[in-house]
Length: 90
Image (cartoon, rainbow, N blue to C red; front, side, top):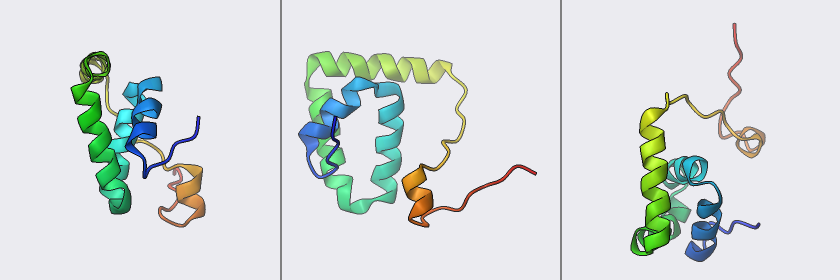
C-alpha cells in the first residue's frame, strides 16, 4: 500500500490497516510536518464520520489507554534526513 500524505483518502485507508500504530504516527507527523497537516486533519474528520472506521478509532483508543506508552524510535528515513539524531544507550 502506498501512503500519500497529501491525500486524505490514502491516509484513511492506511490508518485502517493498523489504527493503534498508525494513529500515533499520524499525530506525530501532524505536529512535525505542517505541510501535511491539512490532509491528516481531513483524514481524521473522515474517520470520525464513517461509522465503521469510528468503531476502529474507539477500539484503538481503548487499547491505547490500557498500554504503557513508550517513546517511538525515529524512523530510518528521519535519521537519514538528519531530522533526528540517534540516541545510544550508555
